[in-house]
Every structure is written in structure tokens, then in C-alpha cells.
Length: 414
Image (cartoon, rainbow, N blue to C red):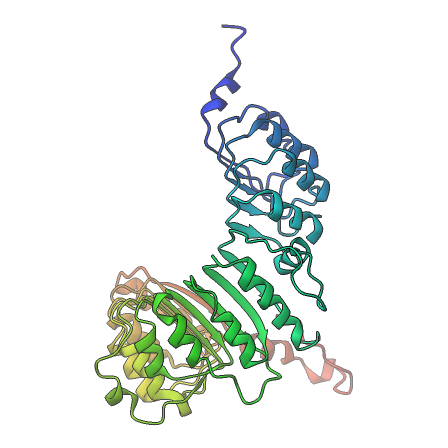
């Protein structure tokens, strides 16, 4: 048995994970993982040489994650493309590769469906042979189903339009889409041409005033959406409910609502039957309370409710106490609430597991009382709390006799 080498067992390994182990050289193991399909090697010393090893030995590899591996460069991608495995997922974010190397990957590995890189649209432009003053010179269709377009508002207005024109043609299978700094209705219309969207996150640029209307997009693509996040758009809640019946996650930040009639009467037969997560941020509930109340009250399966930087009225308190029957997480960070209201939340919602109360107007004494209450009721509620205003006050509690009041006082960044 002295000639027995344990690594012979590696020939049956289908998945190998070693994220974050920076001082361990994985190259020796990679030579013996001929059947491996998944490699998770983020934050390691994986290098271009390692890429050569898997290109030579791992012919069944479908998923490769080398996130934040600084030793991976375009040279490694060139080696990978010489005899590429049937890769479907590739994460090369925060490595040393450039958009030119990624463009080569797009052209040489047609099986790729998920690609994570800091600027995929720029790589797509390179792969299609496009510059911003010409048309597409090399018509190529990629199989990608995820796409992130982070627009720079300082670029010309037509920059995002150019990117969308190319991506809608070259990436028709996109299901998961993120687009930031949308400026024009034309750009929204182009986004609507992606026919397979399921998960969407859109942000309207803050330089746009008034806000863009998202209703047309909802009417065209809403029926298939399971996750929708909108920032700084104007929308109709009635239209949202009627066009997006399959939503499981909804995020609204800086929303503006068009509904002027009593939304609860107008939408008695509508709702969000599958909604499990509702994330509301920076919303004026004084102006939009009925719309928010309708979303919460018409979501019977709501499990997570995030209301960050919002203002609470008595009506909204009653809605939260009464309607989310399956609530497991309530996030009220940076939303001022009373300790009495939180006590009622804990009593009423039996499935509650997490409470987020950072900078929510709850003092340290009230926080201790809440913990005692949870213990007495034998509930398993994890409360995350911080009171930044109290911490700042502590920094100012200095004896004037020992401190020159004319001297500048510096507050630590919390």
C-alpha cells in the first residue's frame, strides 16, 4: 500500500471549494480534478498558471469563480480560450483582466450564460467590433442571461442608448438585468425589448426631473417578473398589481405614485399573492400612505418587510401590526419608531425572527427592555440595534472647564 496516493480519489470530485485561502497553492490539486465541474477559488492565489492547468486537465468544468484573484490576467483568459471547457458560469470580477480579455472569452466560449466582470458592456462592444460612432460590424449573439449596465451620468446622453442598442441585439436571452442612471424614455423603451426578463433592477438618473414613468415597461414585461427593484421612478400601484402578478420581491426607492383615487377601493380584486419581500426606502408616507398600505395589506405571503428612511403614521403602524401574517424579518433602520410599537410587533408576529433597529429612535435602555421582553416570552427574535445619535451625544459630554470651547470639536465617523 506504500505506493497508494490518496489524490486518486480526486478523479470523482465534481465540486471543489477553497475560497479565501490565500497561502495555499491549489495547482497540485487541480492537476487531479479531471471530472470537476465547479471550482470556487475566490480570494486565493489562483493565477494564469492555474488557468493553464485547468485548461489542460478540467475538460468538464462548467463553473469557475476566481473573484478577487489578482494574479489572473488577460494572458490566463487567452490560455483558457485555446481549449475552453464547457463553461456556463465565470466570475472574474476584481481580477487583473481587461475588457479585451473578456471580449475574447465571449467570442470563444459560446456556452457561457453567466458572466461577472466589472464592465461587461464594454467587453460586448469590443467583441462586436463597435465604436460609438459606427454600427455593429460583427453581428454576434451571446448566450448571457445576466447583464449589468452601470451608466456614468457624466458621459454623453447617447452613451447608454448605444450600449442598450448593442446589448438588446447581442444578448437577447438576458433574464437578470441591472441598469443605472437611465435618462430618457428611449432608453426605457430599449430595455423593454429584452423579452426574457425575470429579475430587473432599474435606476432613473437623479438629473431627470420630473421622474420617468415606468408604466409602459410594466405593461410590456411585467407578467414574467419575479423580482423588481425601481429607484426614482413614477409608477401606478394599480398597474403594478395588475401587470406583475408573479412578483416575489419588490423594491421601491424614492418612488412617486400616480394613483389619485382611493387605491384600496380601485384595486379590490388586485394584489400581490406571491410577494415575499418588500423593500421600501426613502418614501414619503404622508403623500403615498394608501399606496404603501395597499401593497402590504394585499400581500398575504409577505415574509420580509424593509422600511428604511421612512416616516410612520398611526395608520401605517396598524397596517404592519395587522396584515403581514407570515412576517419573519422587519427592517426599520433609520426610520423613527417608538418602543411601544416594537413591543406590539414582537407580541403580534409569532413567526418574527429578525428585527433591524439601527438609528430608529430606540434608546439603549429601551433596547435592553426589548431583550428582556423577548427572553420572558421565550421568543427567538434577533434584534440588531444601534443608536448613533446617542453615541454622538456622548462625544460632546465634555467638561467645559477642561476643554476650550473655542477649539474645534471633531466627531468620530461612526
